[in-house]
Image (cartoon, rainbow, N blue to C red):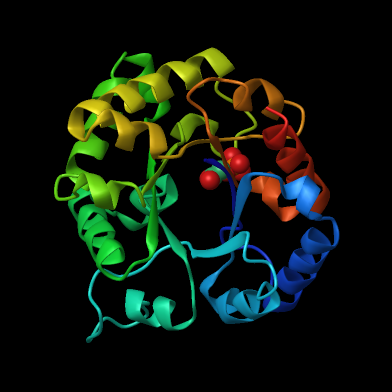
Length: 254
Ligand code: PGA
């Protein structure tokens, strides 16, 4: 499966977000979408309006950028999976490095959220990736493997079919410094092998593996052309409809 997901982060007001969605859908035709599964992840405040705006575009899913693991309760400021489900939200980003870095999310907490998302039938997009320091000390695979192990400890092969893994080296997120296609492919191949051993060959080949970190129209073709890269998780370039559409073109023809 090919997938292109736009993570808007804490950007756009609701009105600006809807204008961005309009610009996006205005540029889409069935031919242009092809076999690509598109996902947009606006802030919580725009989710309901986004779902409504995309009602006629079943090929575009709406994802939340985070969720709480409990269904309800005294958790001021949090948003639960049943709330997202009721809005017809299809997917949720989990374990983004900004959540890990700035909000102290741990692997265990991410595992609980992932479990709860699967229970709620909302597809998790699990983000993993090493910091620059971890890569410099040659520990990138150790770190990514640990993140996968904990997050997927309690997941069956059938359930894993609904999980997307996004490899996002922290040093490449929002920095303009992109992993080379070879570096990205090497990590994706390792993740794919690990998934094969953890689940089975079918599951590993069905699961979409996305690369994220400074993907732009001018570097996308080389990344998307790699064997184990099934698409991208896009931050900055998802905020410009033309750039996101250019990434769609690159992925479709990869
Ligand atoms: P970026 O962000 O494309 O702006 O580097 C990617 C992400 O954080 O998902």
